[in-house]
Amino acid sequence: MSDPEPKVPNPRKADLEKLRSDLAKEVEELRTALKKPTEDIGGDTVWVGKNARTWHTELDGRHKKLGVQVDKLLPIIDAAIRSEPEKVSASEARTYNKGI
Image (cartoon, rainbow, N blue to C red; front, side, top):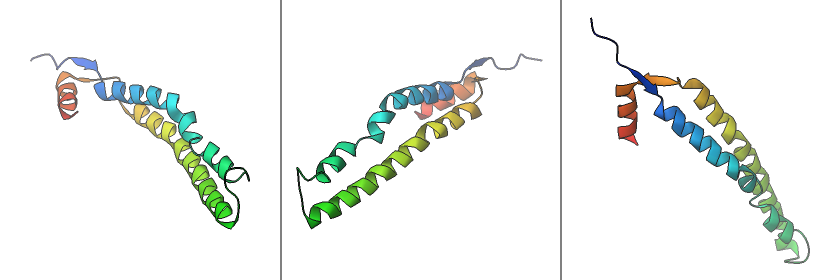
């Protein structure tokens, strides 16, 4: 009887962990991406009037929605990382790496 195929570190898990690390550095910037334009348009110094208020309301809504969506990203990646095994067979790792 032959030995089972050796186990190697899971490359998918490693990629997800790198993605999480990279994204964690960007989350605050993404969350606040529309903050300055929203404040400028709503602040009576850049643009005033009915159209400015309409744009401000729209941009403020998009800013809030963006923040909500960004806040969901890290937990989704964390769940994916938790679902991955630490080690996989060498053939599984090769198959994953070929698909990249």
